[in-house]
Length: 283
Image (cartoon, rainbow, N blue to C red; front, side, top):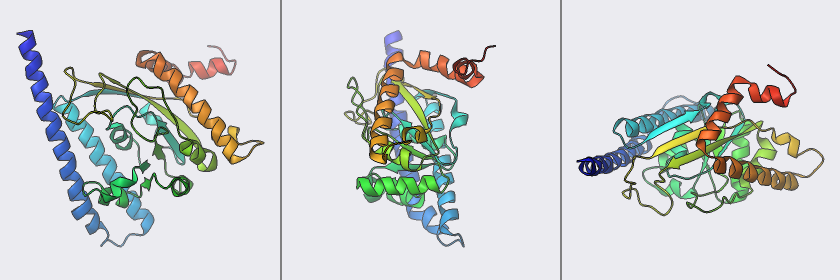
């Protein structure tokens, strides 16, 4: 009986996954081909139009995550989420799953994002990414300039330093693009550590190859970093290399420690215990 229930649950989650991605496609088409073109008829300037686009995408992505949880496709735990959405904040995350970006955009107010250039040619996503003012990841020079410009306008920006989804079991490999953006324009850099157990929607897996057990996403917002400390007394390229190396070490250590330990650390930071101890205070 237990095995039968397990297979029934698997079958339902497979159907729920198909429904979820079908819904995602329909929403993308409606937004890109109908809703966003209609908003261009409104007497809005570029800044307000972009603001509207970001808010709409945020609401849709958050609703999509809620739908996936409601139908039992996944569960999630997002810690210290209230620290996302600061003006000029560069949010950097590892990338174990296809829907990491959906979580981050859905729970970050007014967020810009660096996304694959191919999405501009996709009928499901082209109109959406263009209307929300997202930045294509290629060519690299224009990506750095575009992301820096969005940060300079006071918006948070989401980036994945790996540039693509992580291969399960492989070590992290960070490109310098995110660090280059950080030292040029970010007011603050905020890491977000992501675990998925069991792994799902990786680069090697099609959407229908779901795990037998329901996946759980753990997302933990780490402490803010001041990128200006890497710039003092050196050139921007050298500062970017130093920051990139620091980020790689930071993420590798946190991900290896595991989500349970990271969650405890996040709670300590929220209460100020770690910050007080580092500054020499007690209590």
